[in-house]
Length: 468
Image (cartoon, rainbow, N blue to C red):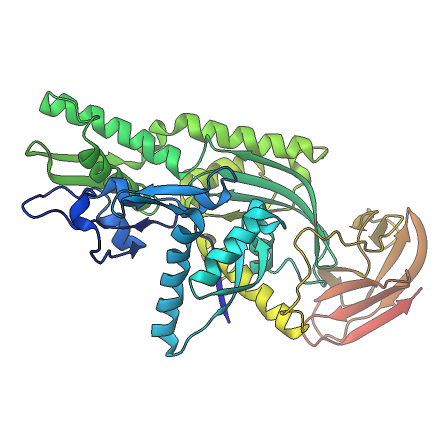
């Protein structure tokens, strides 16, 4: 079984062998019948400046375009279908895995954008492309759902939470507001923009460097496709470097008409160039928060970042400034940009365990889950303030945990439904210390039965329990 993510812009190139005596990578009658090499990934990017007309830098975007049926490939001197073009991406993945594990692996679970996950011609085209490339798509999962899976929000034992997922991709940025309860996700609102993404930031840096080159060399570079492609590739590398470093160098020999180009870009300068894009990020996040009908952004308890730009310090600072009270989700050992692939792997594991891999549920199936009609609160002692444990509408079965220090003399905790007490726990910790850490656990089953227990953290000893 193979689990993978449809990359934001998987590159693919078809280099054309030039005619005898020619140095231009163009298609001509002399390539008829010649063997054509297909490059994917970094190999395609590396030669893009030599062969721009036969290089496709965003295969996924082509798959998402319902109106686009074919693309022209000068190296082949003909049009080919988008399905055939995308199949080379899957064939490359299939071959790489075969080399690594020593045998063919054909069954795959793929995380995809919503447009490719829904049943229809676009999904059918994706499945066909994978099949031609030697992969059988057994199931797809929405990118955002995969990210939540990767961070453990599918665990039914988690407390109900309101989560903002910000997917900062190369071609667009998506913001989704979810409530998570009982291991299920419920979408409250979403926002999408292509005015803040990796492509926009690279273009801003590219424009700056092109003007800088013209200032130094005294002639423009904008109309030279080969030079601009080389410069763009270096700008993308520099943007990645600025995510971890304070500055980056852009250094190209003989960039245009034999003139070299060199520039040092600081992180502060880069963030200034992308100032408008970062403002758009704020706008789309605020749009999603407004659409969720929340009292304020403070209602968001967790923020999850995903996508290639999620490691950029400026992006993190913009998000945390909007959600100052929320916890930025950081799962140990999980890279932000790999979260969707990990989530797809976990989805595949779950389907295998449930024997649903051959016929998984559709992505757009709505789960009709039983929910709580009233809110549930926990109150410590007679004078303490009530804490909202499970809001009305929480999916059943529901689970809630609350940790705290208890004095050696003991304590008392009440459980209330809409401020009316329905149960009480009185307990004394087994300890010689002045205080002991305990956790109050509340579980509500599908029938509405409430079980509450006080558990000593150090020994897992259950001090008291009650079922209502």
